[in-house]
Length: 314
Ligand code: BTN
Image (cartoon, rainbow, N blue to C red):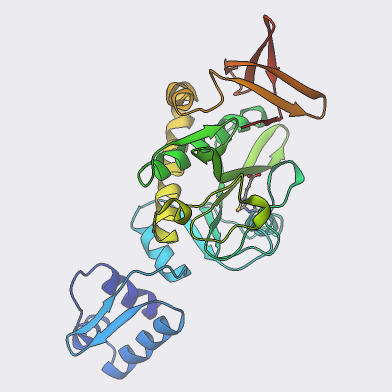
């Protein structure tokens, strides 16, 4: 599409691009260029228009044009969708069940969600200003029992990205990301399974960036802006997407062994005495490591217990 091509020209130029240069490159008139620029601006894309020409100015607006172009620059086969929806995980699942997915992976982003889903059937606060994204990935022969390791890996990737902006970023098993003693990000993995093989992995990632958190969360959650970090959501989304897809490719070759040392180093759970609650009650003991499947190992008075699902007290 001509509008996308014009955006790409502006996006890749550090200087203003003259209207005539765009018109000549695309074989269209100056008036047509003007119309396309207006279209981009009407979508919230910040374009400086002066006598020197047009220049794209980065902003916090999330649009599929800007995001697609940045993702395309990564040379990863990913379709980008940006839309305000109930839950990005649900939207991706609907695309899968309607056979609307291609061979390409998907990045589905919502500027806000009307009913964001958290782990264990909880709600995830999803007001404007946060990152709400779902990555849909078609693994090659991934057993369902391996999906926990994918979740751990994703938590590790989010941690690495946030670590560039703020200190004291840690992971609470399995995949809550913390800054200090407050949660900043959560991950919800769902999958479409066929005969114990995961055909689609749906990785929902929520990160508090500049969204205002509800009063009920003020003691337990934080956001990047509450930590004094001002960053565009798009920058976070692009970095997390790149990191997750690149590391998933490594995981497919080497398994989780490559990552376990770093996961443990960044963990706020392993090495500490913790209480884990699940449907079967709660147990307290020292978290001593991870099983081969990624389950948490707790030393319960000398007996090592494997925690498959549960809530660790931070
Ligand atoms: C948790 O902390 O319990 C997991 C939170 C996962 C939230 C993300 S936001 C994008 C995706 N869509 C959803 O409805 N949930 C996940």
